[in-house]
Length: 387
Image (cartoon, rainbow, N blue to C red; front, side, top):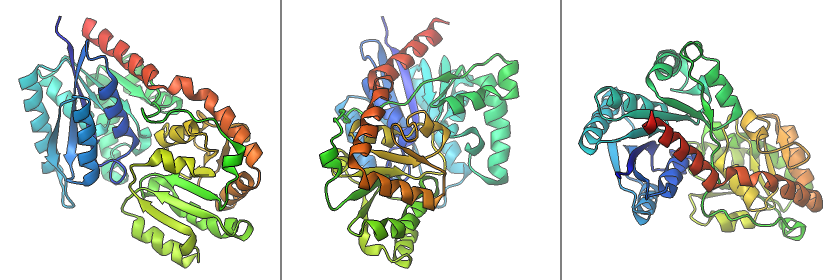
């Protein structure tokens, strides 16, 4: 019996600088499908030519998952580049008799839908990793694309839509066309990465000096690092030896470095860039902070919970599905520097309480396992082919 051929379309492999959790999930899914039943291929829509890109391509090669790039991306990219990538995907699907296209970003979902209309696939699925109101970006162009594709075309053209959080699922369900078409999105949680084995929280480890406050994520507006840097003067007034580690890259690095200098905390804020030793870095943190302005289900928050690190995160719907305030971590209003600094100080000065929160947080981990995520997707894929 022929295996079911699945094309996973992700935005790109430059993870940690240009792309993030959505792309990691697409790769993890491709690497952990049951190869006796499924035959996955990964399409990285945008090729960046970075070191991170090479590392993730090597991982796919180690798992014997074929991959290809749809088009190159540079600073002057335009719609012509995008449609060049769409044509590449259409040709590839026609040549390889794809059964299911699964896209992890809006542009990939549209490309998959066009490929299906051209006879290049039996079914198309997309996972919404971004809030509906932010799909396709901001401004009038983003608004027009959301109205045309996210609200109208996708509910009619796609065979299934998945969401990574309950809030995202509810927003997809409220679309008028989706309701009229009887299309119900499905909730499928993201998973803890394969190298994040749970570590029991330890109050002695959490109390180590000097205290380390860590944050992992792309240096972009979404991740809210500017609020964390603004909170550091208040933290240092109480914990003068504390260090802030910012792990990741992005377009805001220079601006954040300038902000640290302006706040007088430059010597205490360490920009560590992209790192391959995330488990070791997490093990050295007293507390992990995610001050984002929006999130789905943050993979990095799951990694931190699995590592036994107490967590502080913005009070956002996706984060609330992982953390209960003052029970399994701390939730602070997005952009509220005073609340953020107060929570960091509380975590650093109360290591036993922080360790107890971290132990409580780990109770959610079974429902976010790779095995659970993969089985939900495999069940969906089987149902689409049977139909």
